[in-house]
Image (cartoon, rainbow, N blue to C red; front, top):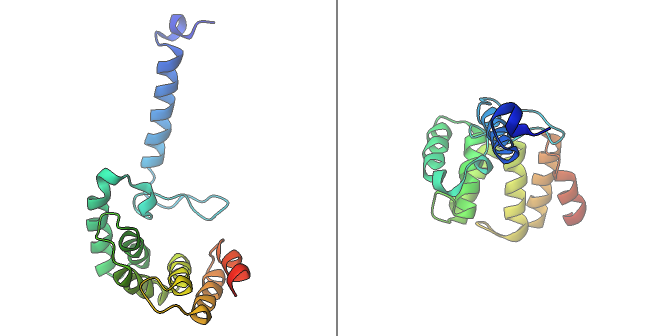
Length: 153
């Protein structure tokens, strides 16, 4: 059957509409959505949900939340400083934000801090401390921490 004849749109237009509907439903998520890894990134929870044109907004958003003590935002600020996304690349500042979030048992921050310690990025290279962070991240629910621990410790 010809989709255009039945609905007044071409197959290509239908695919575009479907893609837009899927993106809209993802964007509508105001909280974390669970998947087999624990969550799907949303703009409220993860810098990965942003694109380069909105990094400055993301930086302001996470900075405000981090100043209010939100460990998820602290970890995201750390990632932004580590990668130079929306903030100048600054590994020392990155480690400072990871440390704040890790002190609150944020598994992602513990893993990120462990990687920073393992490679000496923004801090002294310290495999023992990296392994401690990987173990803490595993304990606090990171699905990736065991692999880092196994390969590095």
